[in-house]
Figure 1: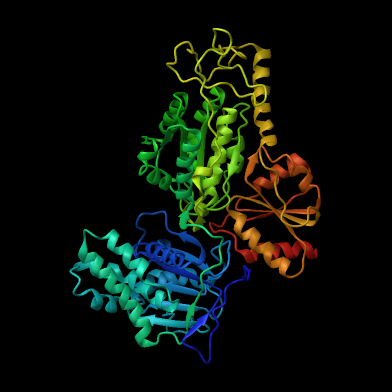
Figure 2 (figure 1 turned 120 degrees about the vertical axis):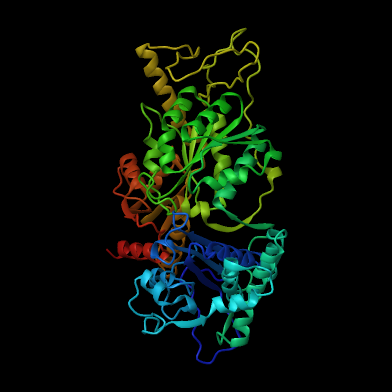
Length: 627
């Protein structure tokens, strides 16, 4: 099995064969936000997953529900890399760009690799659309696309012809043109049509006219490629040789929702998820609301504060409580997070980061909430912070957060981001019967003779006990005011306040001894360590693979626990001459590493509303090695 993260190359053949086998390809669908590009990309992805390819995706779409049609602001895109080996990213430069209109072409052409393939809906390149996209001349005619292979199709005319007997009428006729494009791409890459037609049959079983139209358009796109010899070469990517098991294609938000359900089973507790919808976290709520059969209760509150308030109440009442949000919502929840910390209740706060500050860039990726997650509370209020590193890891990191929250009786923040939440990858389904028992027995009887002392602590973890209100003999008081040690009575005693602040801080710091040490991939010491966290996992690993293929010794490590850090992190970072930290922010982890370990960590930072490319980090690594 070959392993490479270099940009895929579809060769331009002078003497082509009918079908050529390649090891990987990057395809990007772009069009107006109403053109169905997310759906076309998702269906192509699912067909490839069912075929057995490894893959990774990157959806990108406007925040507005309907930006002005045909403008650059309204462009929606979906990129997928498929491969016959294990891959880590959606890829850097598309080999194929499917552009449904001039705006899609203009805003994405710069990313396409030289000699790449451009598939266009030729009928969209009319004067009005060209003007809206900012073109002075038609790029299909003025030489702009010289150096690319062009497949031009009159998709609107062909779609109308294909669906004329389906029963759809009016504006619905052209809504199937995304399936025409999907059929054409399925022909070009020899993807089976059956997974898509089966999905359509389930999706539109009650609307046979829409089902018929989409299937007809899908087949018309395939037949256009076949009968017009649109490309002299079609391509074939073999199934990947992955570890045996049952795979599904999963997004980060879905995996996190499933992690919440699994954690509830492993903790033997009913699940409560209280939240207010916000992009890009809302899909967690949508997925959880379908699983009442697992004891999951979902509550859509009137705002963020009510959402977390209900979750704290559920935790007090003995539920496994969650709340989810994104950047500005985390700010609104901050006061109640401090309340949960003061009451020492287990609560998991999920923050799916997006471009900020304020409402910022709701549909674009950023990792800029790290310092807010660690420090964004009033008073001395340390609490654990974890981060998922990939869509499938969102499942495991959620269970780990629950383990810590229950064992140490503390709120925990879990960071995801837009790339993880909406991106997808094949996931080998775990055997849930083998999940660890993370349950924490709730106290049923007095713990000090005939008295119940709510802040009497476990001597190992410093966690207090958890008594469900209404249990006879365990009546107690909690709230935001400072507690007297052991009894939990309200206390303004200066020495007691110092003791309780120290105790809560020590409890969190001690978790460093209960988490896995950070693993170094490569030499344990040397000239350069690349250290990352969150969604940069794939691109960092991909870049390190590339430089190692050049014979260079570069080590890499990735953090999933960000507060406290793993106990061995100081030893690791001091073992290297240079530590490079790529982040989609202005250097937040770099600040923490410098402050904690006094090493001159080097930042590589980007806040351009786009994820890193593997090639960008590769160039930075080479620059540091050669300097």
